[in-house]
Amino acid sequence: MSKIKSITAKREFRTFLFLIVLFVVVGIVNTDFLSINNIANSLKSSLLYIVLAVGMTFVLLTGNIDISVGGVLGLSAAVSGMILRDGGSFLVAIAVAILIGAVIGLINGLGVTKLKISSFIMTLGMLEITRVVQVIYTDGQWVENLPIEFKQLSQLSFMGMNVLSIIVVVSVILVHLYLSRSRRGRYFAAIGDNEDGAVLLGIPVERYKTLSFVISSVCASLAGLIFATQIGFISTTAGVGIEMTVIAAAVLGGVSLSGGVGSVIGAGIGAIIMISINSALVYMKVPAYWNDAISGSLLIIIVVSDALIARNASKQAKKERLNTRVLQEEVRESYAK
Image (tube, rainbow, N blue to C red; front, side, top):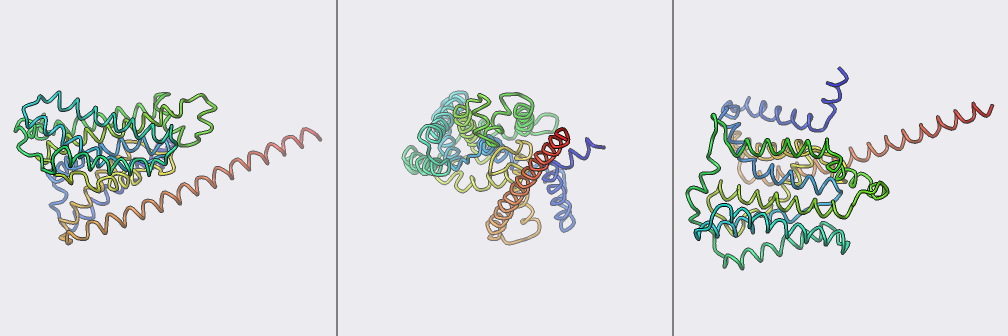
């Protein structure tokens, strides 16, 4: 019973419950929303957001934020797309995309850790730089005519299940196990929870902060490849505004903006919710121009809720520490008597 209670108390469980309620409520209005085909399409449409949310979780756990993921996605997709369009191999395109993400993430991480620049300002500036570089590299043109074999990668299936979906889900589970079960994986949350305490424990804080930005940008590059396979072309506006959706997805999934709390599974479920909401509006015949208003309102609600939860948790922790001190004083006084 206590184990069940601990599971239901987790933020990830509440997020998953919210996802189920969303599908049930919309399904009552339009039963087609509950079809197996639509559920599979919702997961498939969420894949690049899930990958982005996983990377964003690493940064948020350390108490920072990465606004540049949309720009990294667009630039990586454009460069790898041009390589493929001009006859390059899949492996070269993937390697270049990952390299781009790693370099940008390293620059972001060093800017935050060595130059002590705010992560918001550093990554916001990098977002603008990557956008300009993408336009210059592509000469302001869309990257089209990608190989058919590449575009079909997102359609591959195994035993009726989408192969790309299987890969992403398995990867999320493995990353979750790394962050929750391994000693080094728990360093990220430890840094966000108490950076000074992490330093005293001997955790290489700057190294892991930098690594979190590298992971986030590499995930953005991989998301760019997924974007290219699913869409089939890369426009100069690819990934514009996606960072807000990703941050909202991560926080909705239980990742705290103040750092130290959250999981990639919760972030992944949050990503599915954010995409499912847009799909739900279509099934409920809500005009498309409401999408941004609803997403923006949800983001505000999520951030406010996260702040209130963090504040209550801090008050509770302080209360527990105070009670412990009082109890210790009472014990000392009883021994003195």
